[in-house]
Length: 273
Image (tube, rainbow, N blue to C red):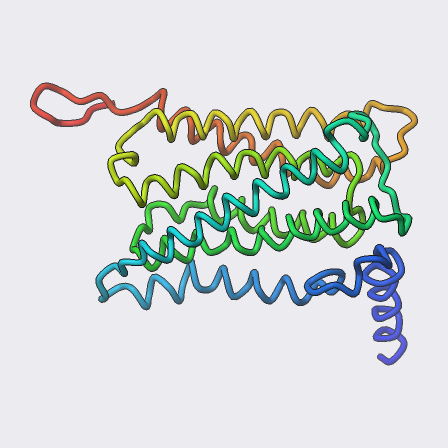
């Protein structure tokens, strides 16, 4: 038994200590998987079980002021990570194909790692969107797509900051940050000016933007498979690409059901397919 435990511990230290980036593996919520897993477990338990049970016989909370602060923070934070990602890499310095990770301790390399870390921490803040849905009794918005997307983004960004903070795959975070600036701006306006929520155009265009984002991410990551000599690890594509394709299919399905195959309304007001 002791030998089995010793082997498990050696494999654990190899994966979560030896293979990790020594520049980032001591940072909060980095490298140690049990920390992020604990937060995600609490998140899933609350939004899927504890929260709905708590709110069952209670009126929806009015948290508009909290939402305004949260959305302003998200817009500013996402705008910063987008601009920093462009400034320190993707604007003119990074190669668009097979850009390696700079593991040095240069000022620029450390800054890229810090931007990656900031993006990672923002993914935890994104989880609050679902918590707010539950507290406002917007249970219809706590969909599989929503919960899966937020959960998987925390896990993927954890892998990025732990093992590969920068390089080829970091373009996904830069693009995603831009999309979040648009998305949280809409969320902010919908709280300040509720009539914005009645505009189908906003929601439709944001969903289109998310689909374009995921399609581009699939293409960008798949390059690693077809590029014979690449300075960025090819195994990353086999890890990320299936999730991106699955996410893309979920968004396309949602778009089709919400904006293409919408139920028609008869003259008497009854919906029909």
